[in-house]
Length: 440
Image 1 (cartoon, rainbow, N blue to C red):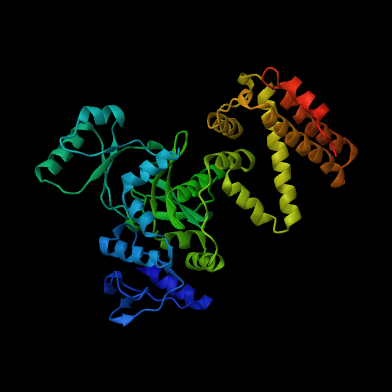
Image 2: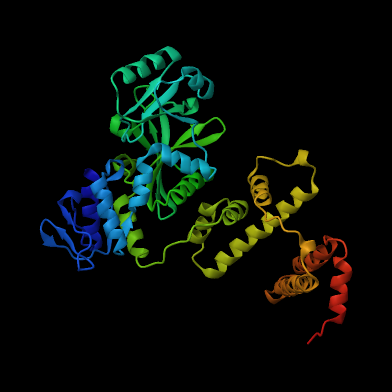
């Protein structure tokens, strides 16, 4: 593949010793006395710093077994065998994305005999038929109507076709075009819009389509980054469709082709990928982000892509902290506005509203009234201590009188809010505890 030669060129320029190895030339020995015991073409192989896997959707069982062997011996894999196997199965990929709340086309797993009435009711016509393990646009076709669909399924059934396939809702707004977004290490590094030149529905560059440079909107970039995180892909091409209401993820690739993307964007993609691998070599594995942190990142910064953009633009620590603080204050003001304004005056589909509802729906249902007196006292003291510190912080930072006073008043309002929102009896108990407390 041309991409392999591009990686060799980039590695040579960066001073990286990069070897291209064929998986089936390895001898895989399990249970050998030597903890490493890896041979390639009958020669002992030294432990590599990393392995960049380019087998993609065509990865067979032997290759997966080999990658697992390397993984269990502590070799860094980009990408790993579990995620390669996951992404090679298009339905499994869509199930994982849908579970994470990311937008996908409605999909049905094919079976025989097919219920055409069910398919028409759930997906409508035209619809897309895909094999589960196709790549580069192969194994994908469009059925215009129910008659054509019944002819196709009848042919497949009579031929006893062995390939598994899925049926997908046809996204009309994306006819003949989509966007390939390249994500490396959780960041969007390049994107191109792919367009069909023949008027057909396929836009793959490998099938004669063209790619043009594309600057993905923040919402699209965030969808691509979230998809890469959900699928645990270090390096991936996320294909995104245009929908009437936004975007939908078409599929993900564990070894994306990038010839057209390089021509369109002008970015040296192998160099960008290898530089990220070198820069993160030896870094601890990232823990998966909980849903609450994702919702907060979306609410405050427009998603993790927005936060990473802030860190990329502000290399000085103080400037970064200032930019983060301003966005947190702005988000707080907007959240308070949502609290006081009538529902009819707020954008229910807006980023802030969606983020607040996500946090509210996922909140921990705790009955504060069930806390005993000692726990209530400790909680109030902690809130009070934090509020006092937050109240003096603007003055320590040299804030002017007016904004400093406003921030101080806002900070001191939290203990009052804590008491006023208390279950019955907590105000009296808490104030009594404060009066009786042994203050230093």
